[in-house]
Length: 198
Image (cartoon, rainbow, N blue to C red; front, side):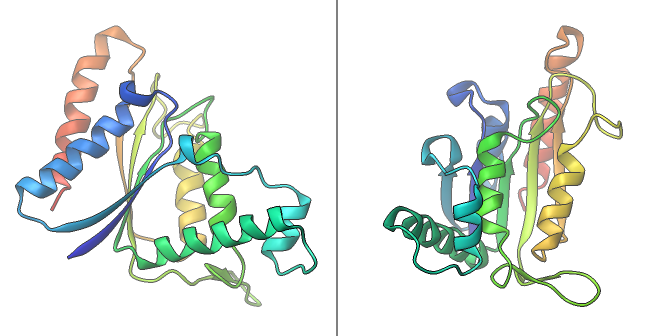
């Protein structure tokens, strides 16, 4: 049985296209007879803290921190444990103003943590998360893949790679604010998501 960790980060709730793609993927897995243990984290409801100096130093081992900061460190530990226990990381990452949602960035700021998910070496950081594959569902209003305006893809590849997750696939739904493209874009993205549900 595979363990699937799902991260939803869209602020659009039931109207989220990335969440619809995630749901289509998971439904297809069930129809294909794949048995999964699924944990779904809706990052828009978790109210994850924004990284500041106090949190930053606490995550690096600072002592004598407040009870509130201790709780944040404990939350970081829990999120990291979830990630390390997963076989598949399924990320919903809509593009907002050319980048990932703030809620998703906040999750990475708590999880990409030295000595826990990566360690520094004399040459290049070494990831400490092993055996995890990632699939990213990314919706965009315009056309950005392969263009300088796509900051989502390189950021996610880099931060996941930092932690040791190098097998990363993307499903793009682009041109959703372009009426002539939207229908086919969603259809094709859904089909690709279903094809990857093996």
